[in-house]
Length: 448
Image: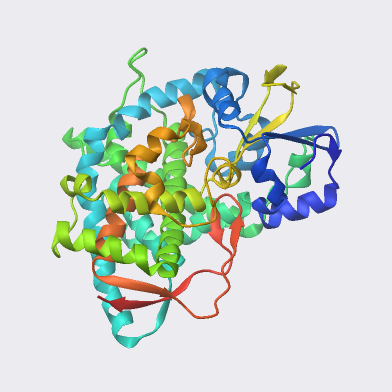
């Protein structure tokens, strides 16, 4: 990207709809500031940790998510935490935050571990037959089950495949922004939606509203808290007003948690298995730690402190392949970062994909090396050299959930299996809403 250089609208749209990371040339990883123009819209990339911190923390009020995010995500996520702004977002965050408190998440660790162990049992037949499985699909189903059990207990046990397929259609659809959105054309102009998207949204909405109806009726009858995330959200009240969430607000938060909560961890786990399959020396260190600490037992929350290398492996995978590869904000007033001017109305992008590969911050950045996350190495880096979950007041509310989930899945499955990429299979990261492997991730499963 070069400052001030216009973008060819057709090529830019084609690139960003097909693969959002393709718009960043290799030079983007080594510049602090870049700017381009599409029609009347200026796009700015910030790639210096101080600049990133300025947008996410120091002057975050000047950088809401803005129109583009609302137009892309709104039809699916409504006004959930990922998509809302201002006083409404602050209210929703206050209400939802206790549901993601550390003490609450501890109670969900066993759900994560036990669900992963059920997947491990299912894999035994594949390991014995020598066939391959698409690990991305396997991780999608596993994390879908974890989020479903965490959110709803067993309310959707019979329809998880159907709901999961609908969520996938939804994510694929919103991952392709239209030219109307990118050019900043008025929101009243209709955006075409496919028949598949409309059918998926109808299924998702009908399922969730029926769960809410049943749960409210059950809670009113018994007065008992189910203990899952939905029960916590239903019971939560704004400490200022005493108000809870309406069904529409609950629907938006549940769809956001469901979509983001399973998709991002599943994608992160897919890349983790791929990286371990390509680096057997690091895989061996992981296996040694798991054998010494777990000794064949199910991983539990209390074990996580004794599994530092497991954490380092997962965090390094998030560095190289951050599921949320790009964050977009809009400047509501003129601003400056360092010597650079940011005009009002500019679309400002912060990209973990770009910053996590900056050789000035990460020596030999393409190399997989979990030791980058030794405590002493972390202390020496700028806090915003690494931001897979964003940062500041709008840091992902589910980041602790995802980090715990990823480590427990890794521990539960890696202590029983080695995964090997199918020989000759092409591996290409594709940035849509998340950073998926374009061609899937077929892998053979070997019992240890």
